Length: 322
Image (cartoon, rainbow, N blue to C red; front, side):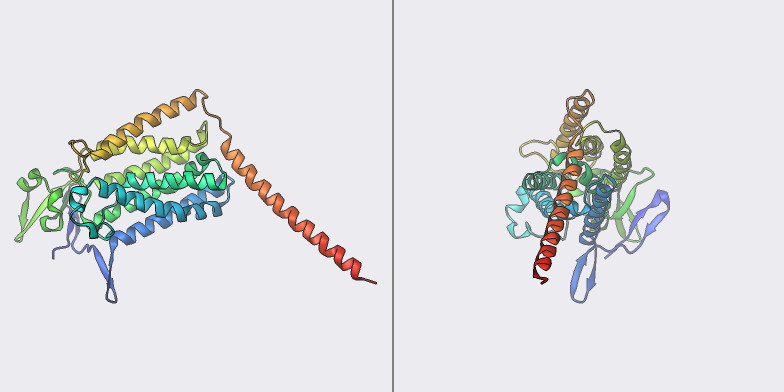
């Protein structure tokens, strides 16, 4: 099987880009490895931001367990719902993640739900958790998109521009291949190739820019939760345009509307409204201080308990001496 991927106008020719490798008799998909790396780096970034803002990194290591599980479930459920016409006849494939089939927006929704539940159980305001974890989330998205590179998926319409990506027609899902791609297909050494827009690359670059902007924006936020809202706004704007050129769009049932494009547009508008409302003073910047104070209070309470215990032990020793 031809495993080449090329960016001809950039002079990049990769002749052996597999989608998986073998360990013993077990096949490991690069898609899964990439997602694993993305999750790990995202957690480390969130812990780093927690330390930078005076919070406990352990809080985010604990949160990661629940948000990762909830995020993966949300991403899969979202994808299956909007491709139900296929999965209703292939129920056994619903739990097969090795060939992709995770929707970013579903993952974000699942992770946010986990944060809200976790904050309620721990009696912590969720806004600061979202601000901090959001930095890890966007870095995870940036890395995770490269899983699509190995799977030859999440690409856009035909292009002959600077960043055009050329792949064998046989390596792409035919449902993602447009008539324009077929009309402009090239035959090289007997192999048919199509050129596509590498939208996964555009989105990865978008997430890198958003991460840098979030670090800057955090220094100027007016209320807790604003950094996460800023992320949702920026990603919504970028995703709205990127989704418009993708050929694997998930559609709202009964319409021709791409669900993620609609969601991105709504998110961008709503988040812009929240930011503007916060900028005129409708929200207060006190949750982060509250979390830090709560952490300090717990530490003092723990230290006090240890001191009392030590005093009790000393008293016992003194009473035993004749």
